[in-house]
Length: 159
Image (cartoon, rainbow, N blue to C red; front, side, top):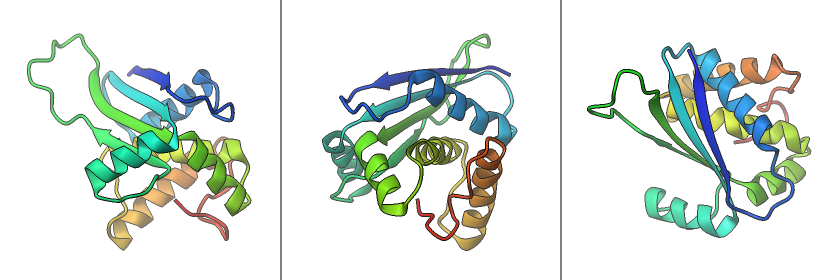
């Protein structure tokens, strides 16, 4: 299995992680999920205005958010030698930074959590019910802890 990751940094926020770090967290989430085959994921790092517009347009929520995931769905006619597009993760640098500060988390750890969280949404995980949330949170916690990141759902944890 290979994971092809396209990262676009569309904001001027210097606190966003370097592209190789973003790629590594996305790849870890895909691999830990047990997804098979060659996969492609796009990541776009944006400012508050862009994520606010997306959140409003696609979720009817009139505010910026930390991360949004847009699964690609089935792509008909894709050549067999092409990676399957998983979808897009859009993440807001300023919201992630503000949340990390408010929650007393290391900024890099919160970035890791949001990247893993958004990727797992692309892979079909959700947190709409208690059982879905428990499954998704357990996987997130395992992926993060394997790299030394504390449980994001601990005392100060939120998504």
